[in-house]
Length: 312
Figure 1 (tube, rainbow, N blue to C red):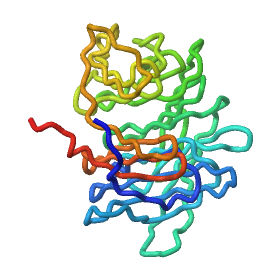
Figure 2 (figure 1 turned 180 degrees about the vertical axis):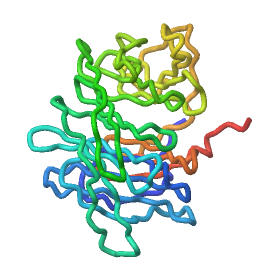
Figure 3 (figure 1 turned 60 degrees about the vertical axis):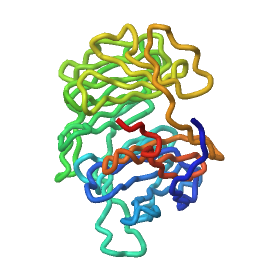
């Protein structure tokens, strides 16, 4: 099935953008953070909330950010804390920020920089929070290394406690932290996915020869991950059996035909009325049937999948 968008539009972003994140720690409403990517260095972070009547997306605050934002993640246990990866001079940097108390102010105050994740020599790609509950560790990934940090929010400090090298892997680009095991993460590169044990910083199982763009864990079931790939759309995998995916969800038109042994799921709906490329998707943790998309022109659209779910 295909169709246009009937979603709720937020048009408050003045500049191009590619980063949007669900504010998981906000238990009272569906809330997102979106960050801009402007060469003018007048970049902003917008705090966007779905109104109580669920009829509009409202802006709860606009905060100046000094550089182009290339990655943005909300802290899963403090709704006022988030991380960004950004351009810094000729390279890239990463920091953790705190939104000050707004107290009904019409002009949003300055963000507080809690600490910088300094020490990377390569291009920083991602900052990853453990997704479930409070945890005193953070992960940052550059194109050659994975850093595990011990963070102290109250003292506004972060210290590297271990580091893993990708060795001959080409260009690490991201990863995900296992919500069922805080000692395990998955990293992706140009041609493979690897699992890491954070206690030894050694790689274990892998999916080879796959052009994987992103990865995430199933928060409800152990050992299950989803990957997005250039060749096969979305694939679901059991980490104990990585020879073939459990299921294919071919979501875009240039996917080749899947293996006859693979189980394919039907496409529920396509959202097609966008004027620019989609760079970010964030599901609401407050209402799992809602997701927000962010196109490069700065347009945020909130959609619901409820009309397309089959009755069980």
